[in-house]
Length: 421
Image 1: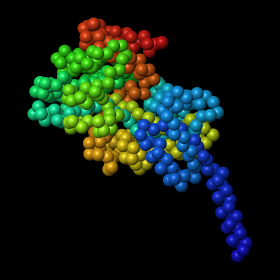
Image 2: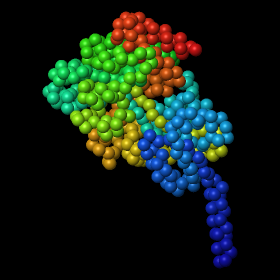
Image 3: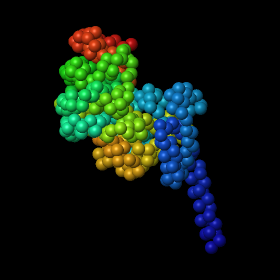
Image 4: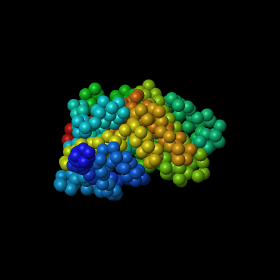
C-alpha cells in the first residue's frame, strides 16, 4: 500500500511539475479609454484557471502606445501583447496566431476585421489580433426638434435623400441654423458616399475614388450646402485637411442631425440636457447602408518568448461569451459578427446609451454586409492620403473656388500622385 501511495504521489508531483514548466507569464501593455484594461484584469483568473498561464498587465496612457511601442518592439523591452490602434502599420511585428487558434472560428466571428491587421495585397491570411471594440460612424438626431416641427422621422432603411427632405422640413418649421451637420473629414464623408454607390477600390484593391457613385454623392453633398441644409460653419469654414467637429452645432440645438459616430455616445449622454436625442440607423441607398468602422485591438508580437500563451490569451478574450461580457461591461460595440446580429445586453447602461450602442452595432453589421469597401478602406495602408485630399477639394467645390468637375479631377490626380510616392 505504501508503494502504491508513493507511486501516486510521485505521479502527481511529476504532473504538477509539468504544469509549472509549461505555464508562462506574459506581459500585456494596455491603454484604456474608459475601463477596458480593468475589465480584462477581472477576466484573468478565469484565463489562468483554464490554461495555467498568467498575465501581467501594465496600464499606460495612449501616448505610450502611440509614441513608444514601436521603439520597444525594436528592442528586448517589447511586451508579449499590447492594445493598439495602428492596426496595419505594426503588421511587421505581429505574431500570426493561426497555428494556435481555430482559424475557421475566427474567420466566422471576425472575418470583416481580420484584414485590417494584414499586409496589403490580399495574400496574407494570418490571424493577428482581436478588436476589443468597434467604433462606427452614423447619425444622431434631435428628437425634440422633429416633435416641435411635427415632422415624422424616417425609419430604418430610409435613404439619405429621404432624411435630407425631412431635415429640411424641420429646419424650415423651426428656424434652426441647419438641418444636417457633418464632421469635416473624409472618414465621415465616406459612409454616405458608399451608400450612393462609391466603391473606392477596384477588384485588385487599387483606389478608384471618382466613379459614378462618388460623383453622385459629391453632387448631392455640394447641393446640400447650396440649399442651406448644411451650415456654413461646417465644411466651408475649414481649409485643406483641417478637421471640423460638428458636435458643438448639434449640442447647441441649432442642427437637427449630426453625422458623427459611436464615440460621441457618452459625451452626448452626459452633456445634452436641453432636448431629447437618439442615434438612428445609418441611411441606405442603391449602394448599401454605408458606415465607417474603426477601433482598438489586442495583438501579440512575434518577439514573444511565449507565443502560444500569448495567442491563447487573445483567443480567450475573443471567445463569444467573453467578447459579450467585455462589450457589456465597457459599454462598447463588439466586433464579433454573431453578437452584432444577436445583440449585447447592456443591462446597467441608461436606456439612451443602450439604445445608441445597439443602433451603432446594427450600423456596423449592415456595413459589413452591404458596403464591405468600408472595411477595406479602414484597413488600407494609405487611407490617410484619401483622408487628406477629399475634404480639401470638396470644400473648394462647395465655396465655388473650383467647379465640381475640376475638384473631382483634382481628387483623382492628387490621390494617384500621393499613393505613388
